[in-house]
Image (cartoon, rainbow, N blue to C red; front, side):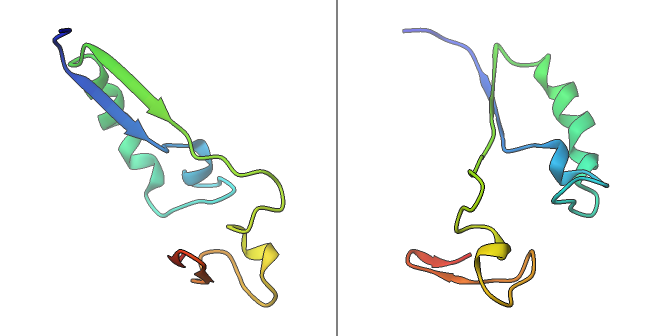
Length: 78
């Protein structure tokens, strides 16, 4: 069985950094610590969530909703 440690980096995107399309306050502050951790692991796995244009996750698909407002989806609040 293979041994070693893996670092999972989940959904870190430029869009979440200041001036990004989905900017989050301080969104860029996580990048340097992640980069520093990468050297400590045998494997690094990066993921990115992606939605096609017109996806139900976008506020523009819900009348009267703005980005970051909560909506009720069939599986629960989003």
